[in-house]
Image 1 (cartoon, rainbow, N blue to C red):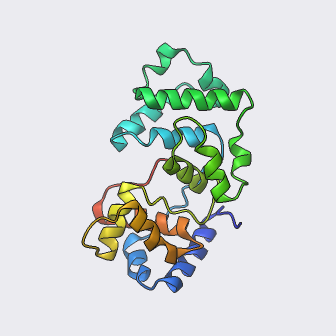
Image 2: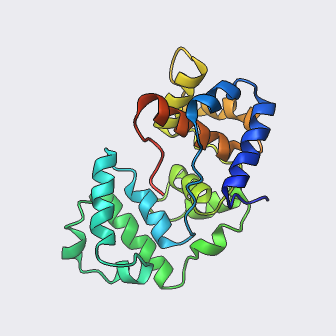
Length: 213
């Protein structure tokens, strides 16, 4: 499995994508530079993705600032936080429970977010989603933005659905199953295709919709 590690990998993916699907030529021109958006694997990277699922991006960014203001975000450090401190972050009850369960599992050595990135994508997603509160979208985005997996397309992402609808001139926003089928043509660079459509949407709508990472 080739891992995305640099902007040159993104460029290689884009060059391959426009060959696979000529419709993407105009989309790439409209999108402008496609960000790498690659973080180190580990608790901080996954925690930021979990926080990014708040209703608004502004809320997510505010919560993440409160968490990072305490210092480096580590599993052991987060697991040791006083519940009263966690309550000041503004997390929903479900997300607070997810972060506590995750940080506890990692700090106790029951889960390793670094080694999971080395697994094949399907196995890695299956392993991650066995954890309480970790759904397919969270696992997919973590593997894309922290693990560098090159061929993931989070078809359940509503913003990505809207981006593809606008970019391809579809009559309606494609549902996850339909979008997954559409994305098959972009193998084995679907992670770059997803970055492209998020960048396109941000450029066209002047609104950042890619997950925090």
